[in-house]
Image (cartoon, rainbow, N blue to C red; front, side):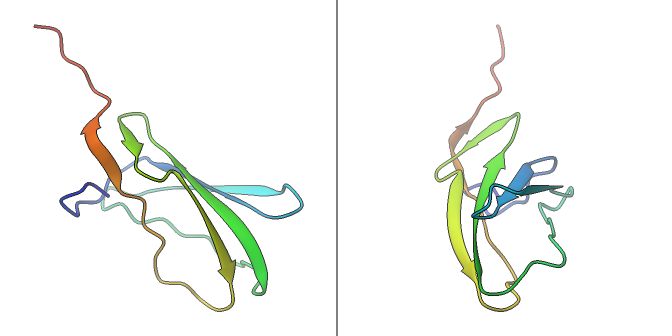
Length: 85
């Protein structure tokens, strides 16, 4: 999401487990994404990558004990778009 709290579309979120297995999800136009059938009791690394934005913290580690409603990635101050004048 942007620093103003707006969702960002087409951000690829990668979820990696301790065995190196990865799964990806792409955010919707409202910034939502979802992983299903995630094993509880495991630790995962979530990484966000977008074409137009960089993120303050592009990787987060979470131990999943139950359903999680949100893991948010917040953009840095500026987008990566540049316009020539």
